Length: 110
Image (tube, rainbow, N blue to C red; front, top):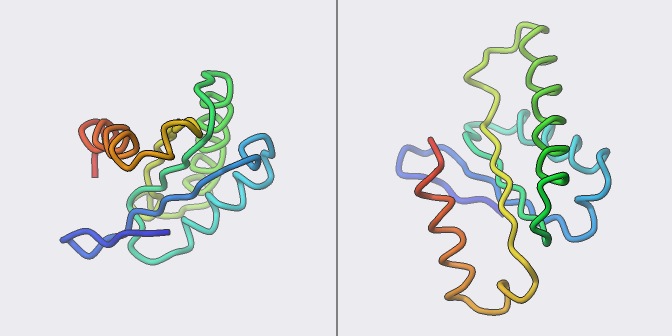
């Protein structure tokens, strides 16, 4: 799912149910995001509050971004990444999900 900002750039939300355990799925999502036009932010929504999971995702992103920069890809073409944990019990309520995403909005730079 994606949203288009007022500046016509895109924010992509990828919900990782069980995929958050599979590095290959995360790499695929990141590369697809880099190939998309005008993508400024990839938000990976994971169903757990686990710093190890977040660290693994961020480390994977750093490797991909570093490799793309090494290959002379313009750094502005590489979207930022945010990992947003939303537990299943938080996702059943619109209000709870809105609060979690509002926190993300306050901390994101895009």
